[in-house]
Image (tube, rainbow, N blue to C red; front, side, top):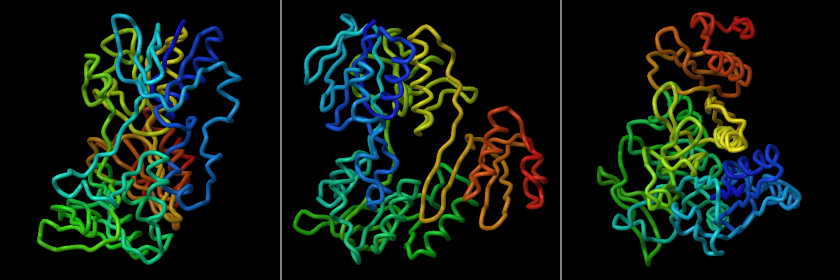
Length: 399
């Protein structure tokens, strides 16, 4: 059995390792576009950029793992097309045939439009090791960085920049930061956190264009006519599923590469996993962007290929590190109609409910609340909102 995996990120690496453990005889080829072996992305713009995590500790596996497991890891390889009829992929390193193809192509950052100043130098996206290495020289104490986007990527970038002594302005076009992913209560909490650290936050005012001097970004014009001078710009305006290869091959696309509950695309010989894949769930077709999801879906698809399959059951959880705060999120808050606040200083958590049903939690420096809520959500159970709000309640009793 020949299995080719396109994409050597978290999902692709997880699928390769799981498949090898379940199928000792399979021929596994893992193709990565970057020159490095599979590595962790979340620490790139935080611990790695701050110099707290060396490059070798970013790696997902020890250097000799891939060879020892007889996984043919090819780095620096661009996959140019899929020949579905012949069951082969064309790449910069030649042609690879497959019985099963797994697309783990991930996602890419949204870029600023070139006609609105996006073609200037000094504009940084945050996705790959090369992106962060290229951005690192910009972090000089006292310089002014403008961050576009008030989601978790933008807020994490703001925290790192302040730690390194930069002046920071963050501009969010929506009425509030975190509007797409969190309740106003969570937005308010993180806004206060960043403002207390000296971050200037502008909300509800889109950036009209980036301006430059001698081909390099030097500021931004806001929609209300204001101008903000800056030394460089970081983009945190979202990511897009990487579907170009699948689209060119004629696979069905629906907010990512559309798959069934076992990761199969519209071509039964091709699977998709991780950020690039959308899949059915109890809430309809969804797409998740997180490390735990990438690992779990990679494991699920590998098991199915090895003949030990079961439908994928997502257990969404996420995290974000900002200053001394660890935010842990369990569940999906879509459809919530109220938020219950639990405050046990210095910990705090926001519990999302739809009626009496617990949907999700945002836990700030509150690992106990996160773990209890996560277990309840995964078990399909809830918790009395009045008990949750009472700081005297022992959360374990909610189980």
